[in-house]
Length: 153
Image (tube, rainbow, N blue to C red; front, side, top):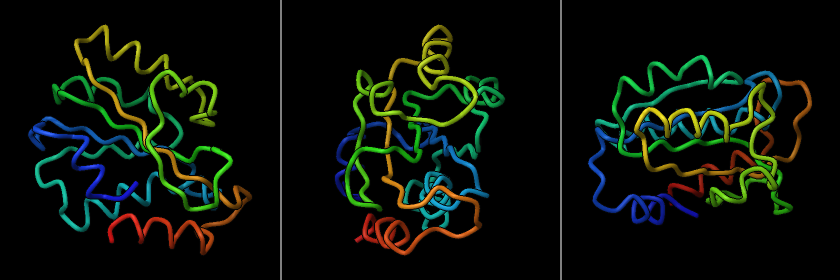
């Protein structure tokens, strides 16, 4: 997936009705890839007016903020082991989230989605980034860094 495909999937949704939630641990190398991708989208001003939530490993701590933004869609971005080459970025279908291992965080991301649905949010998207190394460290591996960069080309 690249940014143009991503934008096409969003279709007519107005940017201010989009909440992107970055997940990951910034101290575990490629586990921070969801946070880095979100940072790049924000820095490049590609979804001007969209809301960005850097939830790290605790999306449950940001539920009130997400609900208060009254989004039409919530997009979760995280590291996901998809059996692809490191740096591969793909949409994960909602019914595959649990089986693909989306999230290494304290609460199931599906529990977060279910709560948000009860609060009236109806659309969700999951973007996964294949990691190379999830060991301790502050920097992304080269293949993941290159995968994120190619997302924008």
